[in-house]
Each structure stands twice: as C-alpha cells, then as structure tokens.
Image (cartoon, rainbow over all chains, first blue to last red; front, side, top):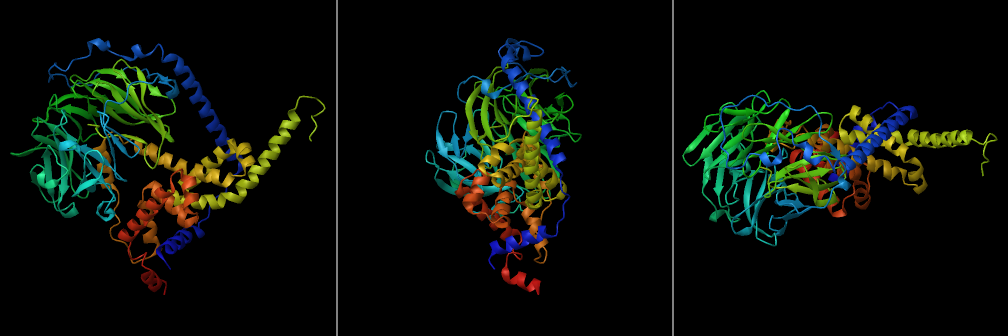
Length: 409
Length: 193
C-alpha cells in the first residue's frame, strides 16, 4: 500500500466510528436568518459610510489638526508616562468600492508571487516565500520553504534563506536556515538577519548586520550568538546595533536585547519588542502584563504607555507616528498615535466587510493597509488627514492574502 | 401549473412553495450531513468546531438554495463553503495576531511539538495531520479522504491544480518527516499484525 492509500485509510478510520448529533432544519434556518441579518447590517453600514466618507475625513483627527502633527525634528521627551485619554466614539466605516483610486503604494510589497519595489522594480519570488529583504546590488534575500522543506521548522520559526539576483529572481545562493524575520535601517542601506548553526535552533548561530549580499561569503561578518537562544531581529538602531527578541528553542522569552559589535545588553522590563524607530532611537514593546509601551532602549525607561487594550505596531519612517491596534467586537480598530508623547491622533476609518491584515508606513508618510474580505485583498492608503484611497486594487487571495507588505517595521 | 389561491393574496401559494423548498432542503440536509460532518471533523480536528462549521455551511446553502439547486451543484457548493469558512475562521484568528510578528513567533513556539511520533499507529499520523497548515490540511482531506481528483480539489479550494500538487506533495513530505513510521507500509503491516 502506498503512502497516499495509507493516509486515506487512516483518515477513514478516524471518522468511521464518529457519531454526530443531527442538526434539524429549524436550527439551520435560524442560523441562516442571523447570517442574512448580519449581511443587511453590513450593507447598511457600508452604504451609510459611503456617504459619510465625503464629509468625515477631516473629523477623524482627534486632539489636533493634521497640520499641527509633530514633525520629525521634534525631540523625544522623557516626561509623560501616563496613558493618554482616548475618545469613546468609534471611527466611521466606509465601503471599499466607494474609495477613489489613489497613487500606488509607496512601499515594498508582494503582489501574489511578485515582489514590487518602491521604485517599481519587480522580482518573481520563490513559492513559499515568508519574508523578503533587500540586499546590496539590488538583489533580495528571502526566507522560503522552497528547496528543502525538511529544513523548515514547522513552527514557522525558520526557513531557508536564499539570495536572489536582481531583476529575474533566480537563486544565486543558499544562505542556510535562519529566522524568517529581517530588520532594516530607516534609510534602507542596512539589513539584519539571523542564521542558525546547522539548522538546529539549540546550536546558536550568527547575527548579520550590514549591506547584505546575496552571496554569503561577500556579506558582512556575523556576530556569534549563544547556543540555546533563537534571535528574531526587530529593528536597527543607529546603524550599528540590532534590537532582537531572544527566545529559547522551547519558546520561552529570554527578553529583548540590543546587540552591537561590542556586546549586548538587555532592555529592562520588556518581554518582547514590537518595533524600533531608527530615527528617534526608541523601541515599542510589550511588558510582562501585556501593556504596550515605548521605551528608551539604553535604560528601559518608559516614555509613554499605550491605553489599555492597544497594541503598538510600527513607527513611521520619521519616527513621529506609530500605528496601533485594538481588538474587540470581532474586528480590530486601528489608530495612529503621536510616537513622542502617546497622544491618539487619528482613528483609521474602518472599511466595511474587511479586516486589516497588515499595516506599513509609506515613504510619503501615509499609512498603508492590506485589507481583506476573506476572499480577496487590496491595499488602501490612509493619509494622516484620514483620507482613504485604493493603492492596489482588490485581487483574489490564494493560500495567503494576495498582497503582503515586506517592510512592516 | 399552480393556480393562485382564490383570495388572490398569494399567501397560500408562497407558503406552499416555501414548504416544498424546505422539504427539499431538509432531505438534502439529512442525506449529506453525516458525510460533511466527517469532512469537517478532519478539517477542524474536533467535533464541536465541526458541527459549528457544518451548521454555518448549511445555513449559507439554505440562503442560496434555489439558485444552487437549479445548477445541480449543491455538493460542490456546500463543500466549498465548508472549506472557505474553515480557512476564514482560521484567518480571522490569525489576523488578530498579525500586528506583532514577534508575538506570532512566540505563539508558534508555544505550539506543541510532535517530533517524537509514537510507534506507528494511525493516531500518530492523525496528530501530525492536525499540525499541517489549514490550506494544506484541506488539500489532504479532499484528496485523500474525499478522494477527489486534483482538478476537483483545485475547484473546491479555488486554487490552481499546480498548487494542489505542491500542497499535497509538501504535506506528504511533512508527514514522512514527522511520522516516518506511520507512512512506512512495512511498519504499518507489522503493527497491524
């Protein structure tokens, strides 16, 4: 018997003795009524929002006008640590098909299986690409499960790291196994990744930082990392330090660390780093009690705390803003906060019938959103004035969403 | 052709049509529910979620019954709802965590590992099947339990035949890697003895 037949037999054995209660028609009919009612509510909300969107955007700024948004030249202050007050009203809801077509995304992203760079360059990605980072000379380094599935940990921790040549996407080098997350500097010139020794998460590895090459022997020197520690790069500080989440191979957090050529130090009080601002030198992270905070990485001093329930995301490239998410009611709410002081500046309007899959900051300072209705996804731009537009049209999803950002930190 | 009722309101005729429609649907529900519950169980891995999933799938079918029945494609339609709804439920849960890739990584670490398969029983293989990604598990269930062709599986999942092939191949590779004993025919025959 071949493996396929064995599998069929095992699955049949699993179900043949299983007994289920039969669902009566009345139960099905009742649930159908609930689904119908929900669809109607969604349609009504979307229709109302389609009207409201014309007049609402300027009103979604909460504590200040867009023009008074703190500029990148403002210094980070250390004083306020209290949670900013949050308005109780929910943001407006708009319909995706009512949004105007806007400029293309000003961010690197994946369109199906194609990497589309901010300058319009296109590279075909290998199947199973998890993440992508640019390398020196225009090539890409990708974490993928393509060539050696047995080397990919099924918990998703690591994948094959491969170098892709500029332009055509052909593989130039197998860089081994490593963390599936990359970090990069604000100006895009430096990247960091972690490569494990022998594809064994208990054996330590090397943390690479520099102008990465798709050919490992020409890349930067790697800093050895201790055995029994898995490094997940989160961001780059000051051009020479990498902020990493360290966990044991069993998944226990071993804290947030700043690693540089002279050594490493732990950021006190953080369980996990969420994002890093290379512009202002601060780190957003999560404390043991689950609260999101922005801290000084050298001392761990808390600059400000997010309101309860809000989880901080990535900083804008100038470090002035940070996106945050609050789960509740089945759909997450997104908002932009002042990254210096923690004031809630903008509630991102919800798009009816969709959920936000990913967020990223565009080079134009707008927040980019991958929105998905479970069948298809689109990229939507939200300006800091709260105006929404389509940056990439809706396309059907495959096994994962059609669109994905590669620069989410 | 049915004649309208004497009172001219149409109420009786509508009720009759609805009654006939519900009778048709109830017959289909009774005939197909056990089979779909088994498929849903293989997709979800537990009875509670399977029953919930099947109820939702049948509820959506109920809403579209007239249209779907006229095309004679009830089985394909309800199976597609079943799989899509299952993936959708998973994706909703995934989305709630997407904001923090690191958090997701930590959660992945927290998942139970099955690197030490048992002595080659079906339960070991089943445990590994449950660790497959949702889409891959759907391919496995449709291909190897429902014994659909690659083209039929692709149609239900709304993906290409090539993707079905690669997903199935990768799933089998994972099963061989993580439960090698269970997919070794000789070992299984020995166990059966």
